[in-house]
Image (cartoon, rainbow, N blue to C red):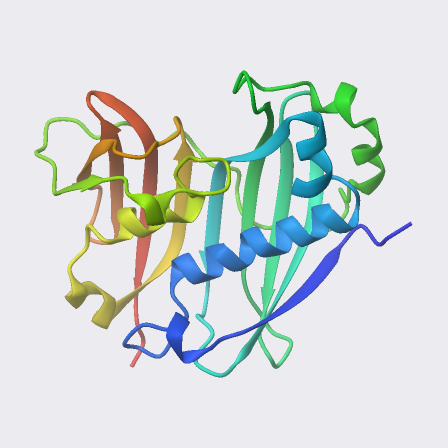
Length: 249
């Protein structure tokens, strides 16, 4: 049987870096999704296998903590493992390792399996009891489990956006990383000159579809912590929390 923990190497090309010559948070989140996809595919429950059952994995929650962002022309290794499986959700963790072998961050995620016809969750343990064979509960993931992210109220939207072709994924809904891109786009460029995103949390509440008109709301909790609420009409489709850290010169 394959190892429970998968390890996948990614190279940081210039076109995935921002003006600081570092990989961006959305790029690292794409690496997270790639690692999860390959890990699942190798173990028999990836997209190609489960689509035959009219099932798809849907990301429900994601928390990312990054201590140091990898730079241009560097390698980043992403380890991933399944921390737990219950009836309706799986918990998957990640560790980020730089080219010197130093841990530079972690991520924790929660996934649901849905029926692609009804868009309703299915019982994972009944559908694929063999997934329990790949649970690795001993490996440490030091990220705290996500707390509730409250809605943003009493403020005007800071940005509007219409969902377009480039936002849509293979399931014909808004790509998970596109939500993240739009969330961090509510900030001015100057903050990225002085700070890095130290911790990012997002909870996905509803699927965005082509043509949906979205409004993003931002609320400061402190100088370094912000809540972002993405709404379609009066309903939130995702909520995020960003904690910044000043760059040490």
